[in-house]
Structure formats: structure tokens, C-alpha cells
Amino acid sequence: MSHVDAVLLPELDGPVPATLPSALGLLSLALGVGALVAPRPIARLTGVDDSPVARAVLPAIGLRELGSAAGLLSGRRPAGWAWSRVAGDAMDLTLLGRALADRGGERRHRVALTTLAIAGITAVDVLAAVRVGRARRARARVIRMQIAVTVNRSPAEAYRFWRDMENLPRFMAHLESVRADDLRRSHWIARGPAGHRVEWDAEIIDDQPNKSITWRSLPGTRVPNAGRVRFVPAPGDRGTEVRVELRYAPPAGALGRVVAKLFGEEPEQQVRDDLRRFKQVLETGEVVRSEGSPNGISVRQQAMQRPAQPLPASRR
Image (tube, rainbow, N blue to C red; front, side, top):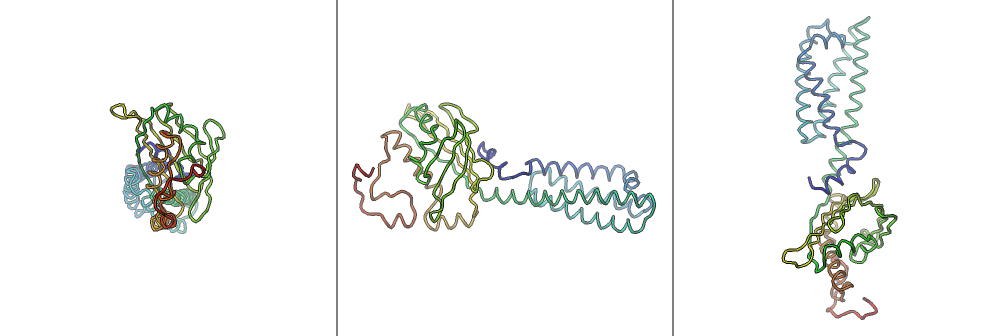
């Protein structure tokens, strides 16, 4: 997992800790080992020790729990394994319901308590399965990109310009404004599809002067995003390699990416264009524009192209 993924993905997980599948796996492991190693004490504790069938079923339940534990602890398809626990819980509740109807006295009391405990575990499993599945879908729609450009300036100069977040709209065409609220937090306003504006708050979470800046959106934004820019001395004393790693999760998911590409708004190309403008601003002090190179690559903007001519100084 990249540094930026590690920053963004916990936000996409929402209120569910990233360790939840592992916690469920450990619970399954404990239940499975208990059912296999000590079926008689477990039968007595749950109130079904008077049934030879129940004592035979407990090892089978233990094997099922161990299977769920192996799947959850492996980290593969956690949502599917979480739902497998829900299915197992439903089977256990069915068996306990039958046992409750056939027993009385102290055994009935123990079966009832066991049923309440399993019902509580089922509720937790359902909640976990839903939220882990939601987080998985959010992770699947994350757009990832890594792009670099070499600028003829020192790492200190490149870092200093980028570190002033209010400079970003000077070369990022999709940004309307960035307002620095303090040394780490800022408010961003971007132009979205069809003229919609998207706003979010972001924070710098790692700042290494003249080397790198890592930032992320604050929880609750419509478009969770995170990024890292590194300033690496270029070989042969040729300036600085500016390496950008960016992650964001558009709300429309895969459909949104298809529509964006259909209309020419390719996210990676936009970032490449932004970095070219960053290079121009840092090396010349301004973005060199012409009527033949409008901002962006949308269908509408391409249709507006005319033979390239230098813009008048008043329009630069």
C-alpha cells in the first residue's frame, strides 16, 4: 500500500475501524477452538448438554468458525467472509430456537441467555458486513495517479511555492480558490462537471521542508482525496523532479469516470496539464497561454480551438 493510500483509505472505511475484519476473525477463531477442544463444557454452558445431537453438532460449528476465521484473518474478501458469519449466526439462532422450545427450568434459562448473546453477535456481524462492503466499494472507485515533471528550480524554491496553498489555483485549472485557514488547514473550491462547484476542507498531515508535503481532505467531504508531492533533486543538476501522487474517490464511481472520459475530462491528463503549468509559473513567472491551447481538454474546449496566436498582454 502506498503512503497516500494509507492516508485516504481509512477515511473511506468510515466509522468502522480498518481492523474490524481481523477482530471478527479472532472472535471466530476463539469460538471455533472452544467448540472443537471443549464441546462438553460448551454444551453445558449453553444448556444443550442433554442432547447427543447437539454435542455432535458443536464440532461442526467449530469447523465452520475456523473457516470464517481463516478467511477474515487473510484479509481477502472481508465483506464476503463477514456475510458468511451472518449466515452461520442465522443457522445457530435456528438451532437455539428449537432447543429453547424443548427445554425447561435451568437449561431453558441457559439456552435463552445463549440465544440473546448470539442475537447480539448477529447484529454486530450484520453491521460489520454492511460497512465493510460499503468501504470496499468506496476503495474500488478510488482513482490513483502518479505523475512527475522536472522544473529548472531548486527543491527549496519548488517546495516554497507549493507550500503556499493559495498559489495552487495559479496552475491547477479546476480550482477556483484555496484559502489557507492556518499553517495546516485550508478550504478548497473546485469547478466540477456541468458547472457544479465542489468545496472541501483539507489538512497537511506531513510537512518535510524542501522534501515533501502530504495532505488529505477532512472527513465528510463529497469527494474524499489525498495527495503527496515530493521535491527530488534531478540528476545532473538539472533542477527538481516534482513527483505528485494523488488519490480521490468520485461520488459517481465507475460511471462517473466513463462519462468524464466521454467528454474529454481525463483526470490524469488534467493533472499532467497542471504540472506543466506549474513548471511554467515557476520558471517564467506566468502561464503561457494561446487561443490554440484552451484550459482543459473537454469537447467544448476543443471545439473552441483556433490557430495559435500569442494572447495580448492584458489577457495573460
